[in-house]
Image 1 (cartoon, rainbow, N blue to C red):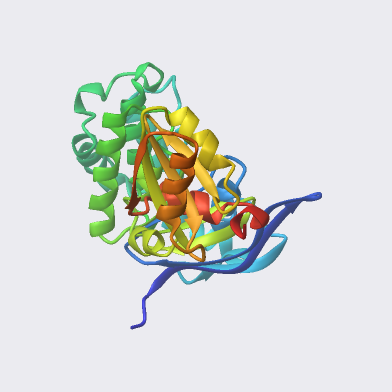
Image 2 (spheres, helix red, strand yellow; image 1 turned 135 degrees about the vertical axis):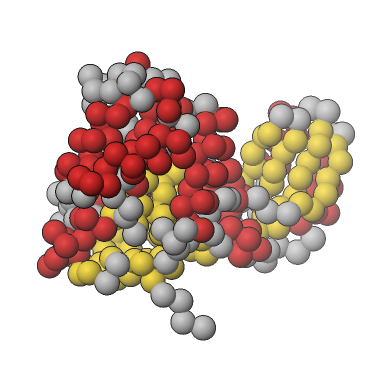
Length: 313
């Protein structure tokens, strides 16, 4: 089945001197979907987004966005996209309404439709009571909603979001994602970068970036089903002692403590992973129960970003 793409990039790279911020990235983003970039700070997420919207020129490679070749026709692309950064890019000394009017002028939105469009956005993003309030005095969640309203005012086909929830509370994050799903259902394609695992799980598809390289790509469900790891969960009276024992086992790729539980990643090539962990703990007189667990997205992230030597151990 052929899937219509909003973004197609091949070999996309960006070098800053000796630093390879993005290294030969291939990307296929289906239309009307939410596609996530998951990775820590410095993994190349922001650099990629800036190349895709024409703000940065790639060192190598090509990108086709909404049927437009970015390198040659970026000026044609800009009216078709919305861009929102983690700092929200609002004018603090303008009111909520004035911010929206300013964005309307920047995008040459029809003057006859501006007032009704602003009223629509104020209602949709719960900002009616703040319409004459200065943006600089808004709460974090209100600033986020205003920034989103500004990004979509001109009805873009593609919305690029660079860690848009890093400065807001959990409830605001949930509300924000509800708005994103409504936009996607309406036909907007959304590319969102994040370092939150729970947000990545909400995406229809996602790529995991590590030091500028794409190390995994797929739906959250597919990625969780193909970690290449057996996940052993350990519940111990002395989790630190259990972790010390497990960490020293040569076949263990990773062990992480979550409260009184441990998540242990062992390559699938190792036979009887559960029995090996269980016996190692008993041999060191550590009381614990063990069982095989389903992979989480955090397990996937750990598995695909392991150093090769450790992963092959």
